[in-house]
Length: 257
Image (cartoon, rainbow, N blue to C red):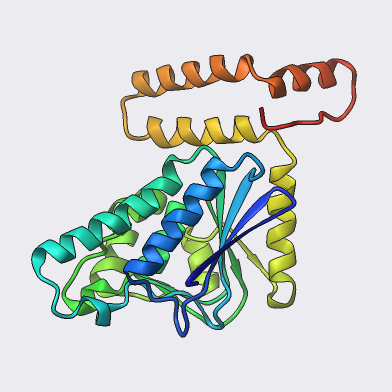
């Protein structure tokens, strides 16, 4: 399997596993989409992590060799499937963490950009959107998500030059949220994920959806989305438990419901 899925203490672990560089083809995209859907639908999953089990690479982007000979319709279908895959991450009311410990290039970075957080390992590898070197543009959401994450001119420069950044530079640019030491990277990521998974995950999910949907609308529409989600959360078991725990001066025991 080019994508593996497991659940560990409330964390859905999606592992990219297509040697040598996790370059995705049709099968891998379908596998990733299925894994994201499983994380979305399984109530045992409270937070999800996307990682690589291939050394030196998170994901190098699309497997260009599999697109050789494709006509425009076939290529358009491939793009549509790729977009649907990452859109499913952004539309899932659960938090997704990209755990990056190797080259994260092209569509690989676009998968990471669709996640809510990007945690990186220290090391000598690169981040970038290099499609321009093929005479193409980022086609899995990069032209839209990167300029929403970092200043537009910085994002544009990366995309039109194919500039590559190391982990420290990616952190400084605002692409990466945290960098952990290589020797403790996975334990740090899982520790952070489990801490989130033990929290009020229904509230976390609705906060994510309020932010993502609100940024695509006017302020008034965004505030309406916020109110609607807050009213839904107020009726949840977690909200009742949170208020009760606060009044009783004890830690809350959230169930994600």
